[in-house]
Length: 69
Image 1 (cartoon, one colour):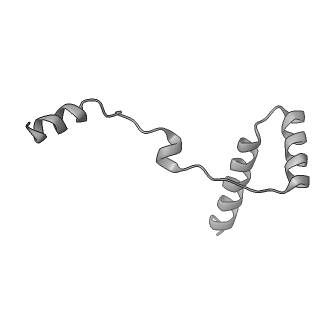
Image 2 (cartoon, helix red, strand yellow):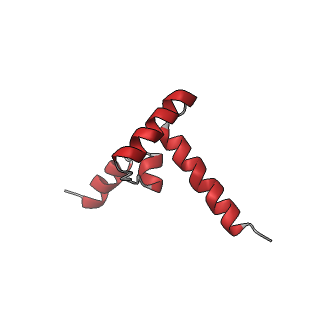
Image 3 (cartoon, one colour):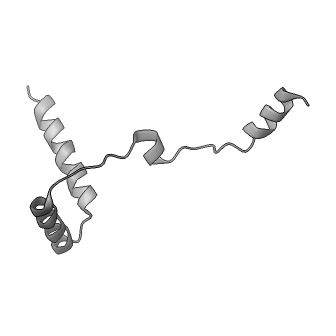
């Protein structure tokens, strides 16, 4: 059995791209019952995903925090 040949054959079957989740990670977040309910109600009302709201808040926070002159 040629191990190098087997490894080369297996490399052909490896995925070319990583998913965004495996590339950048997925973060669990515990908001607590009240905050989760409020966020969920707001997201439904505005027809947005809760994750999009959270991501936008983090982006704006970091931009304002570090782009001050």
